[in-house]
Length: 402
Image 1 (tube, rainbow, N blue to C red):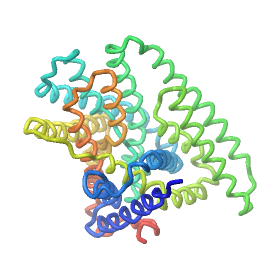
Image 2 (cartoon, rainbow, N blue to C red):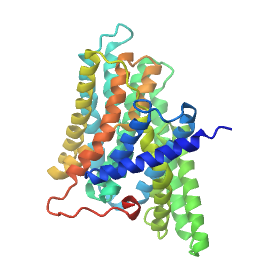
Image 3 (cartoon, rainbow, N blue to C red):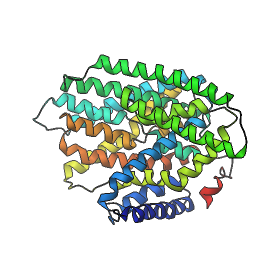
Image 4 (tube, rainbow, N blue to C red):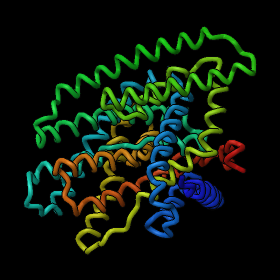
């Protein structure tokens, strides 16, 4: 039996904490340091992580993002989320259309492929840019104490809808390249997911509220049962409905929010997250970075696609927020909160490459764009959420100051 994974996990935990504390010292969110740690210890720099451990780390990383989104659901104000439902849809819709157009336009000037349908390839680049990875934003807003704000709830709602719209857009384009994919079936599965989730969440919520044993020894059972429910809903979302597992995790957390056991569960999951799962998840993003061979054309496309990715999300989502009555500051906060592409864009890119919709020379710039937007988002969030009238920053949880 190989035991190298023990050293790999130790390196990840130590490096993410050290660089996280350094980020905090220079007034940046700790998650920035964790992301950079992955790049430093990964194949792009020191290459300290054994290749044989990547599968295990990938699985832990997936559990990490599931726990992160489950905790976000637990901390979400359901009434505020309902209130921002219409706004979230408008924000997500415009936040999908603008990057879609911007990405397709950027690809148009650089795509010299002679294979397949160039128009579909260009549109596919736009679809990659529609993705939003809200997990980075969630962790940053938690660190800043802004997750339950109006902007925070709007970001969460919009990100869920963005995920659904992205799946529909991806399916439409892939169905044009692969006749075995049915748009109608995908839409039916999405509808089925919401019906299934609503029934499961409502039923579990009321059953959980009626479970009234509060003895200290038995309180732990709530945490275990909650996690089981989260994992099952995440599995069902991905396996049976083709919806991201983190969406199922978020709704699982939402089902348990507002109960008299919520605070206890949150504290327990916070401990699990910061001690092991979150560092591995954030570092794993950096570990995926491999520096490719770059010519001038690819470097130029990388710059263009990165700028397009940032600007189109801020403009698209910010415009949607403004149309729904948000202030200029809130609109900017929401736009910035949707910038991160994270693992979602990489998954979409891999699917496109598998069906011939991804020009090979574009893959490396897309990876760089994903990493850049992921690192840049926490930095920008710190800037736009800073209260200029208050010199004191929101205190961090005790473990984050350790």
